[in-house]
Length: 465
Ligand SMILES: Cc1cc2nc3c(=O)[nH]c(=O)nc-3n(C[C@H](O)[C@H](O)[C@H](O)COP(=O)(O)OP(=O)(O)OC[C@H]3O[C@@H](n4cnc5c(N)ncnc54)[C@H](O)[C@@H]3O)c2cc1C
Image 1 (tube, rainbow, N blue to C red):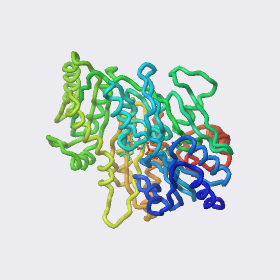
Image 2: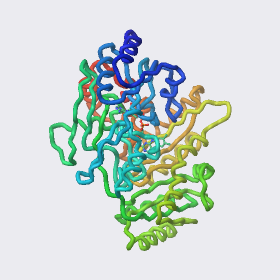
Image 3: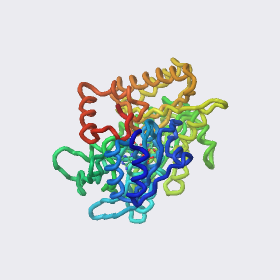
Image 4: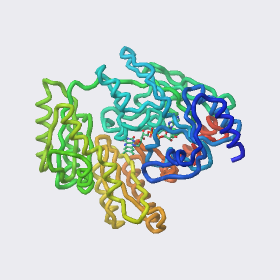
């Protein structure tokens, strides 16, 4: 790239933050947990504030250098890793919670704040930021905004698009222009909703330098049941019973039996975890907790649960959640094979909850079709399922089977009125699927929007389209 070395030299002189070119360090910022990696980035820059970000954007524009914004690079669809020669912009040092205002129900934060840290600070005030990706110990606010992330509380609280009131962004133009989008308040009508446009844009439109997030009171009491079923059909029936009763679970997560077996090896539980796992929490009060818990336990047993473990206090609840939090390492272990490279394909489809039974049956039928065993798990509460397979990216036959399986998974989700991604986004892995999923002139409109924000195509290229 013509201007890259000049860009890097000028950056070093112009910003407060650091620029690192050591290839070993750059490599750490060039890979995702799904196994995707590259050697395309030549440096990593760590801005220390919005002025640095403005300078980086203006210089990148002038030198026509590609930049890759990043939080913690925990994406799972090729959203964050560099694919063409350029420079990574890591927001990890812009990590201040600038303000928490409970009267306004907002927290104003820099993009590098990790979601778990934000929640640790809010909890003593009796508040939470409800979007809690299973990766929340690393996931940053900037990354979660740009991936449109969701989490375990998604069935009740939705995704990032429901919890961002306003943003400050920097545009990639000759000035590195700073803009405030959206509002501080929940209610906000000021023309097109440009803040929402940034949510889920995967770093392709603008650099987020500050977010005004909504916060919510912590529920008074949570009751939790962790149940194990012999068959997935029974589990899905229990799920349908909860949904059709009108109760909105605070958390509703599942995992199939082979995945549970591997996950159980990674956590310490005082009981045997065996079978298909259904984890459900309900919001409650001290007065109603016993009654809610009994209702949940009876519902599980009525549907065939062979073991049910319950919790009403924080530590016990966390212990039950620890099994679900081990989903990703279990999937990694399931598909790792000695002597082979493994690329994980963790899908992220979402279907209307009423269609979950058909989706689960359809996914199992694909296992038979391809003679493989996918791992099933995810946020069943809002119809979001993460079927996963692993394949060797150096083996053309395995690549072909994985591509064909993925195509069928996409067709299944779309056929049931769902979507190709609920929360992980498109990245590099689902570009073809996006083209298939969106109707009419939508892609053309998206490309036109991209060219208004980023006319030289310098922000996270190769993603989405
Ligand atoms: C074990 C595990 C569990 C997970 N569980 C969940 C889950 O439950 N729910 C879920 O939604 N996801 C989940 N994920 C995926 C991922 O962790 C989340 O999407 C997370 O929010 C990404 O945050 P990050 O800081 O790592 O972002 P990154 O991966 O670094 O970046 C994400 C995207 O945002 C862009 N970006 C980052 N910062 C900025 C910025 N300041 N300005 C502009 N663009 C920016 C990047 O270019 C990229 O496109 C999981 C991942 C793992 C490994």
